[in-house]
Image 1 (cartoon, one colour):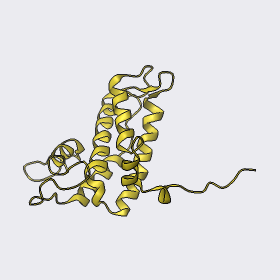
Image 2 (cartoon, helix red, strand yellow):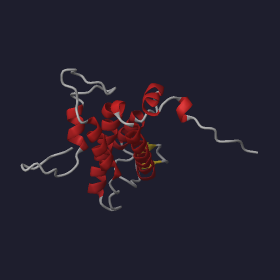
Image 3 (cartoon, one colour):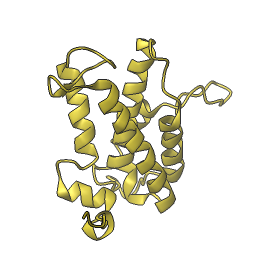
Image 4 (cartoon, one colour):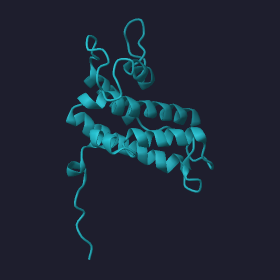
Length: 169
């Protein structure tokens, strides 16, 4: 999903515009807003978003590409967790969980500023920013870190998500 040429060739995958369009058709729980006009091709959109999330990380010193990566990943998180998750296959959900885990690891490794307890807008910055922190907290919210209901909707209840780690002696 993304902009196409006049000949119909896809120029690039674009979660930004897709998310903006989808939110007009689907509510935050993945339900169609207009039953007469249900969102079609959800599985294909999910797969396309997974392709965006699976792209390699930008070069360390390319701040422009890091900025684009951050925006694309944030919109991808929103698109998957808000609008497409409800009807996603187990295969898609499993693939998304792996990519979301990778994304949040990168977010903490490159954007989190421990001394300030907040996130920066650009990777490896010395200081946190309001925009960076808003983005980091927003991602955590979307992934269910602050809501048991959202967590259950995305990942399942404790019967599915809690595992025995054994015992230490």
